[in-house]
Length: 85
Image 1: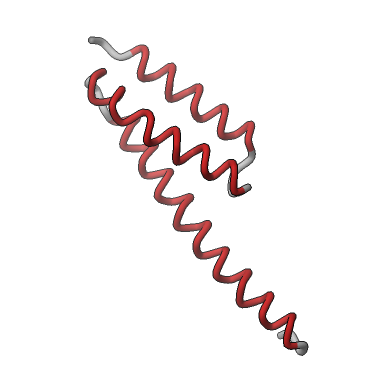
Image 2: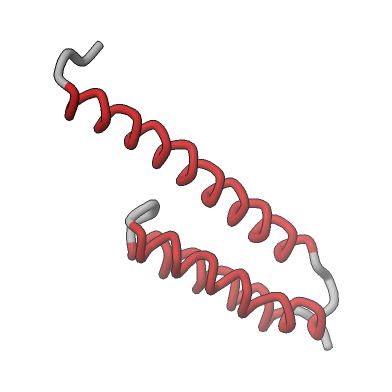
């Protein structure tokens, strides 16, 4: 365990960030899963912007890599566009 005051604080902050990042990541993964399960094009098109925004926020905060975000968004867009009307 850390001995210096600043190092102890840094450990507390890192733990807080880890828990927060884990929460955001899990929430986004759930949103992606829910979007993939939708079979109706209109409903999927309505849900797409919020899911994409969540992915963008993760990339902006550095929780996921920007190329991973681009890959996820591309795959989701392909899937939504392929759905029958």
